[in-house]
Image (cartoon, rainbow, N blue to C red; front, side):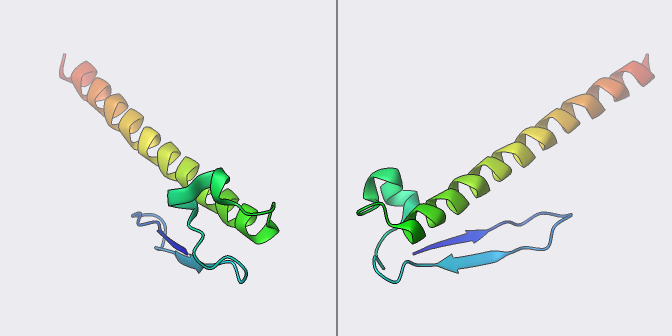
Length: 80
């Protein structure tokens, strides 16, 4: 079982709770790909959702960092 919460100023927070009916204790955050038993499709899909969320959070973080750097550069250029 795992929970994803994406808080963002532009996006309404979304919480996803999921567990495999066969492998209720599988947690993609802890066990990753190696914890998937017998190629279970539900566990694999849970892992894909978890990984996609991780990539999205990383992209948003990178975008915010780059936007702040750009704003700083613009402020400095205007101050000259």
